[in-house]
Length: 582
Image: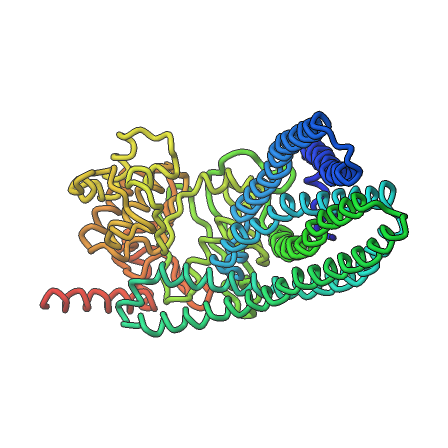
């Protein structure tokens, strides 16, 4: 029952609803005692030939009134308890989503998307069941069972009640053992479901790749094996779950047997009437539900406890990047300075950046080039505070970036990453994502600057065209340019294009860069690219290799140095010449 203690904060928050529901449940449990007693009175009256028509009508009216009252009370307590349980699910779901938005990329490198989805769906459903059906079952089984036992003991025969309850300790021991087994197995079943959920999400997202490489059969077989594992884990849970009802039924059967054997002897000896024995066995019948409910309660509670532990562990993950208490609530502007002695990603020993000392003047266009894995994207992500834990500092406008509130820092930076993500919405909504209150004219202007307006205009629905999940209906170049338009709509102090022109042709690239130069005068632009033509007109070009700066300067200066930049530039020029038949 530990999960109920864990959820104490919520029960206190919703104490009025739970208290009202519990009181109504107790009233229903008490009213259930009336029909068996009436049946006993009627049977004894029939035996003594003293039952009149008026008496029978009165008893029937009492039964009808009791039934209608119970019907109304059950309707209300369901709203009270089940409604509150739904609120718990909503609270935890909102907390999870809010928690996800605060976590750094390092968190998502450790966690799979499918696993996170399973926490927000399947686990929350199990917790909701605990706060709803679990509370109902706990209160109802204890109250009904308690009232029935008291009625049997004090209104009929305490001796026969003790005899009937002899098998109950065995039920308590067995159900407790089953509950322990269930908790362990359900935890494994939930983990298997998370893995299957992740597999499904990954397969659907990568369906194009699967088809391209003809791996459909292999993927189907892999999914079948993983799905079979989920079935086996859940079957393991079901095997324990299936032990509750037979065990309880045997215990109840033994209680009935003892009650009838000893009750008959009491009737013969005159200690009880036949009507009282019928009332007693009817009460004993009412005990079947509390006993079964008690077994069901263990099932629900152990599932809820396993799921709550998983969700709590997720919520307890510390946010490693957060605002300082006295952080500046203002958008930064000015020069950007890097003074990084060393930085390595969490859990890795290899230095991603080493001895980086770089100053970017406000209004400059800076090109960052180098081989794959040289540290270009890492350099940009430290400015965005996506990662921390480096030796040194990054300054923006004279202040270290940690001095600004995250919201203010990131609102002043328009970041277009390598992996372009578009939402399942219209093109207009995707562009306006950075500034939802933008007018149609502003959206179109941003699209024109990114040289994607003409492409959008050719679509039948224009800016109202729904792009599909992750922009599946668009080409790579169109997705890149829409992402650039989204960043430009923010009108940021710093625009970062992280290899964001790789999918467009050289002519379009030149047009976009020319538009940016004209419309972003006085504002900083940082561009990483493998194609050196994208950055040759930059005010400053930085060449990275193995996380170090090996060259820096403008295009002419670097060509004179005859280093990596010149070699790569001439090679690319030659490749372009060959491509055009030279």
